[in-house]
Image (tube, rainbow, N blue to C red):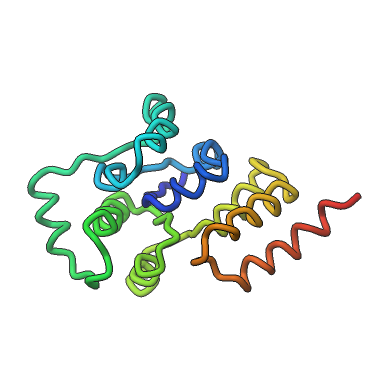
Length: 168
């Protein structure tokens, strides 16, 4: 099974899209750090609680030594401590980073860490049968209405691929 470490924006978007259960049913072991969990609102934490209780979301608490190692990571200033904790945990586990955060994605790409964003997750959810292409198109359209940081060209490409498949 593949391992993945996710940051807060993936949780936030998937909760808003009512697709959070797909993340835990797509064939990956999902990890995050307590620092990421601390970035979420109480209502978002409530949505994640069943996955924590079931052991499908593993929240890692770092030791004082590990925190010092995280702080010492040579990262751009644009990455906050929670982002660095995701990088550290992904390296420790040999995992893919799940993020929609541009600076974190750029760091991962330039440091040979596998990274997957929300659009890649939509693709994965369709590929493993968690959602249909019709649902993917509808939810992506909704996501585009409130998430201005998405790459418009990639979104439009997926929508054009998924929408014709809705008919018939």
